[in-house]
Length: 271
Image (cartoon, rainbow, N blue to C red; front, side, top):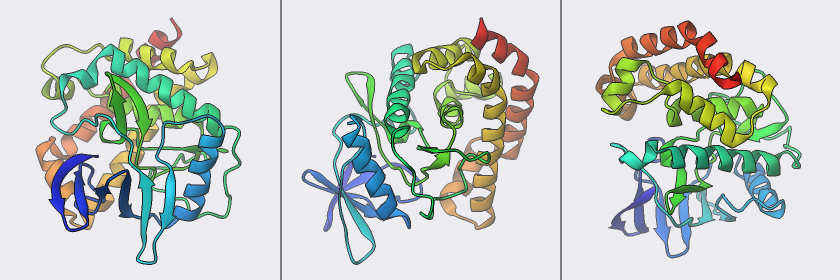
């Protein structure tokens, strides 16, 4: 999130959909609604720091009124309509590298099996790594044009590293059919080359490269169900976003394109 207007509780940080208008900065700290699994999540975030990962907020405390206090992470956060630097090769490579460092630190941390981790964006296959699951531009802090930190771990849940990379690829490649990609970015983007760049910067294994295109298809289905649930509940932000971005026809078009181009994506990743 990025700075907005002033409020009685501090400076409003704008961006995102779930906690819009409820996140405030007061000096070096951010106050926001705490997720239901905040205690387990805070333990994990502190452990990440102990294992050398500095690219996440540091938990400070939980309050009796259901809010959490975290350290503010300085830098630039892109908000829609996204600036052109979001789709530079430098930004893409840095996101892959940041996610790799998150996973390397997280691999040494045991995930609390009894925590109430959210399931809506979680890896259906499960896993032993706590994935972020929502590495979209609004949740990545940049400094000097490079991804430096991740924020908003509300959707974090156990899964496989390839799942987290697939979720990130949806936004940063982005994994969009040509018509949708042109609407988002008037310039030409080579999705096949960019997916390879993301995999290279992450250091993805050959086995996971073979699996990645299919996992992206599955992740897209999971994200569609996530949106559908909120549209069914008539949540205004999701209703507006669906209308502005081509409705369900766009989702259908993307899914058809991903399936049709699976072999080409696999070839690009293994070339």
